[in-house]
Image (cartoon, rainbow, N blue to C red; front, side, top):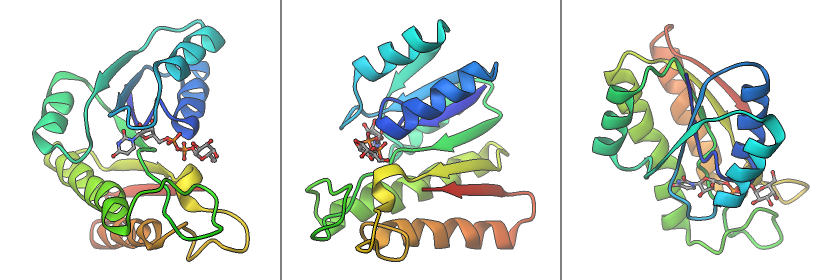
Length: 169
Ligand SMILES: O=c1ccn([C@@H]2O[C@H](COP(=O)(O)OP(=O)(O)O[C@H]3O[C@H](CO)[C@H](O)[C@H](O)[C@H]3O)[C@@H](O)[C@H]2O)c(=O)[nH]1
């Protein structure tokens, strides 16, 4: 089973469709800060497949531990990112830098810690709107938090060859 964080959002729900169509079992995890039940209903309609969804936050380590304990998760697709507030950059969420870094960097840090605790070291990161776009994008992100996430994950992978991570924007 593949866990898709932020699976009720635009980028995440597209990933869920692709994974279901490829025959994978999927579990969606989303705090529904911007994700919607309608997006999940559209996934079900497009694929004709059933999948479960748990409501909760990637920053909640105890919640993540429960999810990993109760489900046979083989890998994680991490899409639970929020956009920055840099003027003129798409994907802006209206959140402050502190809120963005907390969502994106702290959320990823806690997710990685719990994954490692469960011996799970396969991760795809899909930044979607949080990655920014066009000439205004800074270091691959609408604010520095996406670059910080990439650096964190790169350092974790460099220190332990068992970790496998891919990025897409
Ligand atoms: O801590 C968090 C933060 C976010 N989320 C969830 O993560 C998902 C993020 O998805 P969004 O749709 O908010 O963001 P995307 O990057 O997927 O999509 C954005 O970027 C896209 C471009 O790729 C389009 O512009 C789209 O309209 C715009 O919402 C949401 O379900 C949100 O509820 C969490 O679960 N936990």
